[in-house]
Length: 219
Length: 391
Image 1 (tube, rainbow over the protein chains, first blue to last red):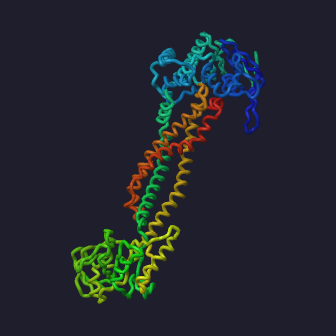
Image 2 (spheres, rainbow over the protein chains, first blue to last red; image 1 turned 135 degrees about the vertical axis):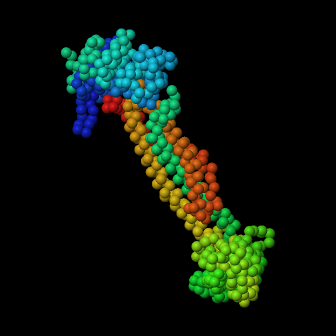
Image 3 (cartoon, each protein chain N blue to C red; image 1 turned 60 degrees about the horizontal axis):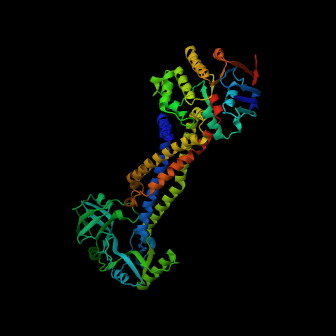
């Protein structure tokens, strides 16, 4: 489903270029639960962003099926993201001035998919946020915030969910809940790619790939 | 949720940033409106004065020593009062007001006090037939006087009191406001010309004639100086034993005020605009910085640059619109409230300039959008992956 073909990423910095990814070649199957493990600075978030059509690789190509993601123009790539990919971040990145429901609906207002508010309500109910619909992110616990972020990722019914340290700011109980939701999405046929430096997602993973100094390590 | 609603929610969330931006626009607009309204008032008043005003001329006896005249504000030489009629009957030019006076330095007494004063006898104003106008100088009846500010104050006189001049008592019918003008009006005692002529023993004589709004036929290309010279020649043809000079004090004051307004608008206003532009720009930049994660996540959700730019542009327009409306009314209010104090001469001509409102309402949002342009560009070009990684 996703094919990263000899991906390299170099960031220019004041102290000279930094190689974040070095000739990464990878295929991810549809419906796979893939975990990237690695220490901080190993390049795992960069790889996630490149796979999510968010950041141009310096070298190499990324295919989603037959589509070369980075051959698309910015508008088409944005549409591709809206229709196919859901993101979950460690810091949640909910829009602070919108309510939980509005944050979820925000994902639908870019033309990604026609849906009704009813669907968002059901989803939020399923994620135990029914009584927090009109709350702003600042009024939520960290676990609730991440559940709202997961709802925002799920509402578009993406093919892939990319999760960057999704449990990094959560207590074990909430972390387990989040992983359970991702697992559920996977069970329903979705592809999940999780980036983490802990073993939190290992039990759900079809495959665990380690990253070190921008290179994949198969153990 | 529409873009507009999202913008409104963001505004409600970050009230201070929004309020400070609106204040910046209000400041710029209010300043522009106030200076333009006062400038317009100044021009309106000046043009009203100058329109059909022609030249104001001062006519003195030929032997007048101008040094003495400027020191004492009168000349001891006199000329016949009938010169006024000669001027009015000249067909080569027209005069809207003729004011003949006889002024002399005298000692005035009242309440056991005495003071030196300029005693000015005013002839009933001669107004050309068919041109009914309000007299420039209020007429004074025989046996009555109007007192300049200092005379009334120093001799402790008020309306209804009596004052002795040249051995004769006069009734005080008016105490004038302080003028502080260099013509010595605050130490004048105005009386009927006939009384002054009688007591000073200058029957039917005056020592100054003011010819106000003198006009003559001019050619299109004639300069102001050429017209003035022509008028002077015409008067000297009729009255060979006088000297004529241009009395431009009021016109000049208005002209200088108008220039001051123009300088104000030309120099200070752009400076205010630039400061406000930077002010809004900095606030917009801070807003973009604060919203980096939001922008990043919107990009991740598939929003394009256009939609993100619209969020900032719509906000800038709202800031501009509110600032324009509030700035217009504040600027107008300020002008009406304090314009009179600042620009005393044009006080009466100051009135709201509503025609400015549409222009301000159109231009202020553009101004605010322009100030937000660079921050908006930063917002749409920032690397969302980098932002989401850092935040």
